[in-house]
Length: 87
Image (cartoon, rainbow, N blue to C red; front, side, top):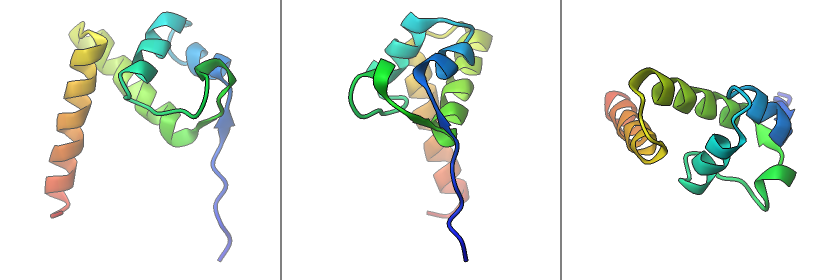
């Protein structure tokens, strides 16, 4: 079985996926919605991180939620998903 390769994105590509809002992306990282190693502008981002930040962006936009509120909503959704899986 071969190991599946994940995509790798730059900070600029992540920002582009979030309506070019650099400050919002940095706030999401500071709030630990996604974690990065090193400085955000120099980090490499995975497909999972892109998916998570896009989900956070939709929540933030649709509910006009602040970044801390978005982080809490995502945490609750994660816990709900874990409970539904039986674990």
